[in-house]
Image 1 (spheres, rainbow, N blue to C red):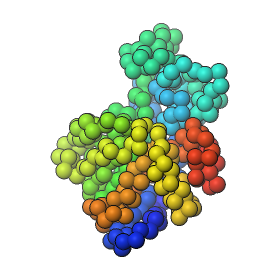
Image 2: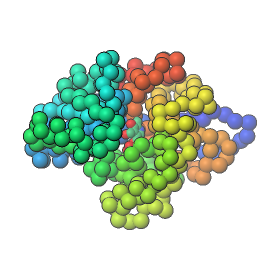
Image 3: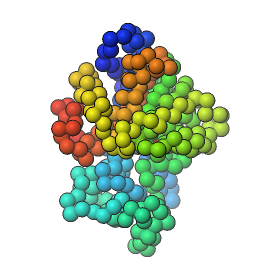
Image 4: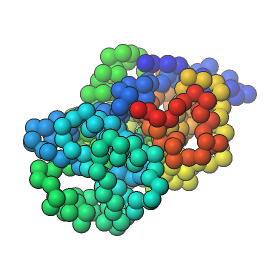
Length: 310
Ligand SMILES: Cc1ncc(COP(=O)(O)O)c(C=O)c1O
């Protein structure tokens, strides 16, 4: 599951100094690829231990987390419930359609109420309706999500650990915290997909330290300037980059929200000779189903992917 990435050539010889590999997390666990199963698994165990009859979570209408949650819960006895950010449109998104088909009950919420999480009005209504509800934080986050990612990092390290640095994309920062807490990860570059996320670095370090009290902060570099206009947005430059990567690496599919931006930032730094590490391992965290929220003409990987991720 480790593959070299072919980097678009530049007039300088800088590429000769670098090796870039990708760990194909997107090819793991078809129901919950990438980081998804790892973030969910301890939550599902906790729900089971608490004998919860209902497992509830929070998600946006194109959420990779919801997609994995519904695929996974389909095979379990517990009922799945999801609070969806924003009103439900008459025409459900493909992700919401899949979730409904998999038996997950969808509860729409206003954006303001959604932000209140388990303290929201809609969460109170769900608590009223059902006994024994276990709440999975948005994106499968929190300590239990990070713990699953720490174990994932240790598994990956067993495959090959001759890298100077690892790199991955962040949303909530849960995956990053788990990886940072794994002593096997030599150095971690984290690329936020969000705009204005500079303060998140401290939260990642704090969560990592809860899992492993050894000081993690000197093994982390947090990059918050690679969002291309904001969460899920694409710049022209990013679109051109994705086309090049798709041509040079025909078996590789990047997702449209996270891995595309992180890899772009790494490759740009490599091309200009500014990347600080010689042998780098990039972690593919999945999310291919997210392309269903974009027009086909904006997806250069379309030739090689079916998008269903199910
Ligand atoms: C494909 C993909 N990559 C990366 C991330 C970021 O993970 P985290 O929220 O743990 O930072 C997410 C969100 O869960 C995701 O869906």
